[in-house]
Image (cartoon, rainbow, N blue to C red):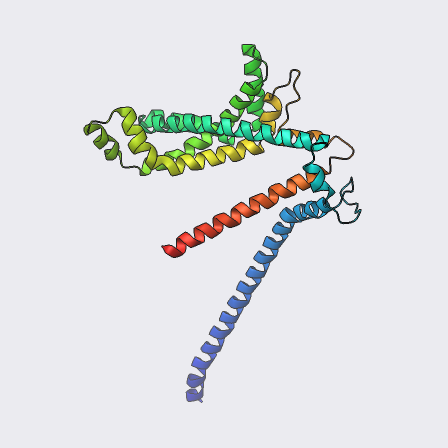
Length: 296
């Protein structure tokens, strides 16, 4: 009897271990199922409205939800020079692009210079300036927009293209700084000093030694600046030209059309083209990165 108990004990322990492993496996499957369900729900919430908009860009019904049959009128009228709404969309697009380019270039130059200057400050001053640089990043845009309007009014400056670019620079410069700073930390300071020891001036050493090492951070800061500027609405609405000029960017134009009973049908095709362009860029970027990874 005792021998049977001794022989059965390992079998019982093995069975208990198997049951425990099965429970764990079942729990892992449940967790994965819940996680996948959550991911699919989030993807549907994000992309279903976009797919809905794309679908109704292939009909000329004035209101989304009505179907007048498949046609390409939304696209053909978007590129028509006789359509007033289409011309306004392209004018707003041009305004958006040139403001973003000018503001991003200036922000990148000033942000890079600011990051380099902060890098060579003492610890206390560096901490103070870092803190001051982070405030605009977490600050509400409405606060920055109102403060800029008050500043321009105090200085007696009307809102104009100048005020708009300044507003976008205030928004984007801090992001350039935080993108350049990590590259400064990784840079070997002896290279800059060696260049000066070999006869290079401070300016020459800056552009021939330091800037090439900082280029990835500078480019990242520029791209983030472009993205923020292209997408901005609040600061643009408060600081854009307003006296006798109907100046619109894409965001302000779209917001203005929402007050109309039937927004222009060309907006549906225009936003669809933007989405397709972004997807194409992301696919191309992924392919290039995968090829580089395979070569490595």
